[in-house]
Image (cartoon, rainbow, N blue to C red):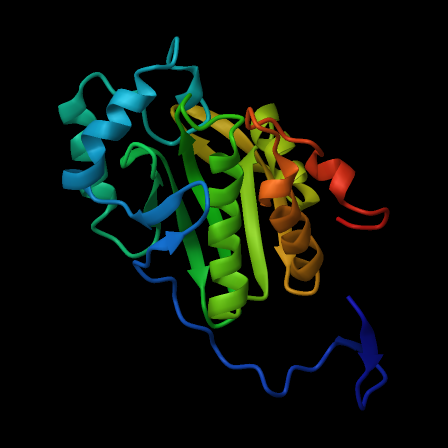
Length: 239
């Protein structure tokens, strides 16, 4: 962060004389080429999501989540019903337009409109979404919504420091690693050190451009395989 001296000769941060609070995230629907992100609803999405999550070989996808795994559709539906009562976290379903069914969910949480900060979390992607363009586009749609539509300055990603897949995903998407908060959380009867990542507004044009290029039709062959990876698309010096 750039610094400049104040009237006392002390270094202070960049002034933001025109800054005003931004809107809180809303229950919007975001349309992409590969998926649709829409407000999570127990009646519309819970049964499809439970069926999609049940395709996993075991419950390991829930190890680093605050909830789950779930023993029955009714248990999962009750969880969705409870979590969708609040505006923070604000949960969204990821819908595959080819089937019309939800196959994952994620949330905008720890919302701080006064400071322009929001976190993406509670990311639960079923085997139907993993390693597909849908999983990347769903993340892109929410990032673009936060930065381009709402005007946020900072977009965060936090996870258990032992959750290697989540940490890899954050870096792949363009987040910058900021450090480890030791013993930050107690969940599921154990301690968690939390890894922090972020994208800030000055980085978003580069991060967003790389994601759009990766998601473009020309980056996929006739079988839907990527031609260039995100790391190949980013130029040296990009986050």
